[in-house]
Length: 489
Image 1 (spheres, rainbow, N blue to C red):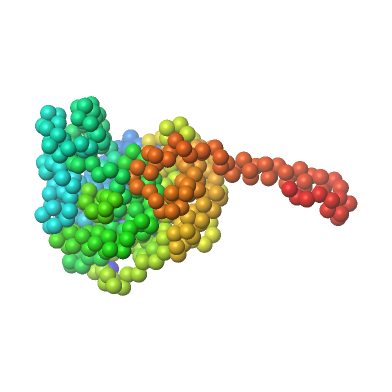
Image 2 (cartoon, rainbow, N blue to C red):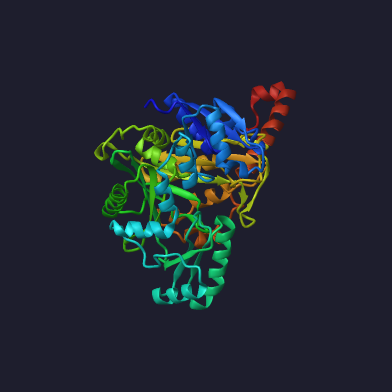
């Protein structure tokens, strides 16, 4: 790969640091851009070059004209968008191409296609992918939507036609709820995406959310790296991701992977991508959407496949072919990713801001931590609440759950509230240990978890206090030290 020598990273936080690391291993120079609020970011210091973006703390990461200008001034060959912000902007990808800069991702036409949930559903249906019964065109009229919902039969789900991340989405179980929930979903879609068109489809009760990681080059070669189970969610936002799914049988696993690969080939997609499905209790498979960017949860797939997804993404953008055939990809063991968010699970998951006063990271075999925070770092209030991702690996499901329990127990972040206590409760739950969960898992379990029961920091502080007192006593009494008359604890 010779065409990419220098990459600007149009993002922040742990994903920016992740891309910088991939670039360094490929011998590629990295350039960071940052808002005033991110001046102290680790990724800013780790990049080979860094340039400030002056203005609103969020808007500067969305101003692609300015970002492209910085890339040109810094003599960058390519831009990696990470996830969020401009990662799914077809306009941005097109603008990069017009300015002679490689967009590290799929072509603009595919970003546009899969950014439109209805158009992508229609396209996938045409190439033989199973989809849920529902509308094939955007709906902007509440009366029309009500009639469609009646014809499909309740429960139905209302979704923003242009958007994602669980925003603009409501489940309607009875006809009497439709108008209120439709208006609520529409208002949220307008707020977050600037468009209020919706679509309606049949709602599947208690499915598993399964997604397949694919990689496709510019020459028609496509492989998959197995599936991830993203069923543990809160309000349609993923909380924990697992590769592979502990509940999927081999027949369904092979079927869903084949559906994803065949679909990607038929639409001529290139770069990395994720095809997302719902799988019901009878193992029926339904396409829901395709994400045309690197996913937050990509590390679990990297661990079980030993393939660096970010590096492959860069290489494909530079014109390389895939380096392996499907039969050469060996998937091994289980990996779990825990999204560590600065939020208070005991206070309706209220976002938490402030300064981290004490930070102790877990480690040991089979433990990976993707984060950019540290002791003394101040969480800015302007961005997503995720501050890191804890990823664990073991050869079997029982082993990876035990690994996760140990690693979470070691993880200490003081000064702000985090959702680590929630994760500790989940890995101790018997249903989770048995791999028995679906998209309603947290809805059913959350109120039953005792998030105060596991406070390891209090134990550590008591232990330190005891040790300090013992040390003082030993210093003042040498004979006591020699005789060892008292136990340590």
